[in-house]
Image (cartoon, rainbow, N blue to C red; front, side, top):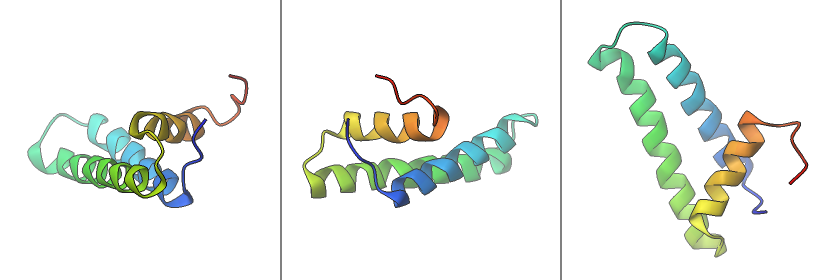
Length: 76
């Protein structure tokens, strides 16, 4: 499996936190803006890291999400 950078992991954690806040309240443009911005920053960073390392973009993104959302799930 791809090995994501600490930066990607941190960016995804910020996006997850923003999503949690955004979906805890009724929808407003202002309430969801931080989530959209964080998700966009994460996606751009995944693309840049995939291009820089030669890793598959999808595999890299999947590795980040597994690391953040399922940290104890080391079994493949």
